[in-house]
Amino acid sequence: MNCFYHNEESNLALNKLPNSFLQKLFYMSFDVKSNVALNLTNNDEAGLVLMGSEYAYVCVNKKNEKLYVEIKTGQFGQKEDITLFSEEYNDLKITFNLKFKAPDSYQLGFNGKYNKNVFKATPGRWIGSKVGIYAKGLKDSKGNALFENFIVREK
Image (cartoon, rainbow, N blue to C red):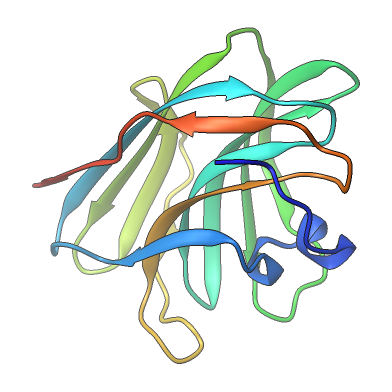
C-alpha cells in the first residue's frame, strides 16, 4: 500500500483520510493481526484502525529519519488526533494487533503486546464500526507499507 497524500486535514485526523481499507466487524469477539514490512519516507505513516465516530489506531510513522510506533485516538469533527503512546521503533517489520471483546471494548498493540488503554467501539456516521488498514504520506512521498496479511480469529 503506497503512502498517498490526500490533503493536510487527512494528515492531522485519520477520519478525513479517504484511502483506507475498512471492513465491518467480523464476530462478537475477535483478534486481528497484520504483519507489515515498512518502507517509509519522512512523514509517512501506516497502521491498523478501528474506525467509528470515535476511533483509535496503532501506527508506525517516520519523523526526522526515525521510526516511531504510536497509538492515537480521534473522533469525527476533531481537527487533530491525539497521541496516547509513542516510542522509537528500530525495525522495518512490525505486527499490528487488535483485540475486540463483546460488546464494544478493544485494545491495540504491536508485536504481540497490548497497550494498557482500552477503547470503546462506536458506530460510524452512517455505518457501524469498521476495522482496517491505511497508509498516508506527503505529496512527494515514495514510501509504502506491505501488509503481508490481515488475519482475523474469532474468540
